[in-house]
Image (cartoon, helix red, strand yellow):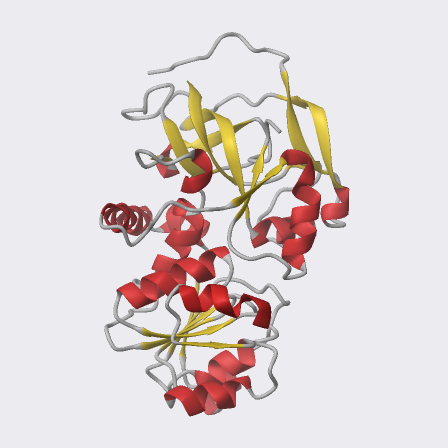
Length: 337
């Protein structure tokens, strides 16, 4: 079944276009971007709110694996209204349905979104409140359960706990009965404690690993998204052999690890996570994560989000502040402002 909105050939839209790999400084607002057309298996979505993620920062510098080559419309997470449907979708959602999902070119008034990863916005939620569902919360849940194998009574170390994934991870780890040790910059400690973290530490302290070991005797699971600045401490703080370290980011830069390290220094279980790759390679597992998230919403563990929403033109500045660690929680862009 193919549904097409009115003929919009040649129509242009407002969008943020990344012109080079020099970072947010070359992310520019244009009103002349061609409106996209949904291909096979895609929806055309009128974007109500676009999520800002650290992956957008990496993409702007050309360091995001498999990312597009400039120039391109930036962004990849959005919520909005289905206004068109490409061919080849089994049981497509109806036009007018509000969905949350990921796809290329989210920092624009319209984007295409793969139907397989699109979920209806929960009833009563705004588009902005739904941001994070298929990325931040799915990443946190994947890191904790299928990869992290969390169990009640475990001790979990969550880095960057004031960020979008970090806040979700703290909430979820507490829900699953774990003790949570979190790291964040000192100004954000109150935010993280309010989420239920048992201890909050400054990730920049030179004795980070020693302090975590003093508090815990070793952690069962580490959620590592910072990279170079915390990676050594993460490996040192994990329990030998049974400790799991799930890596899903490197905000401070890449960190190295040799086979010699794994055999003789850090005898831990190391696992890599990219939620988009997981969705492609293990779709049944990804759908199970979304099903569990829907259950968490129904029982009130996952509340509506409260992102700070900025006009589209503010996107470059938001990305610069995110790169510098000067944000907390979720941020979003409104392409109609």
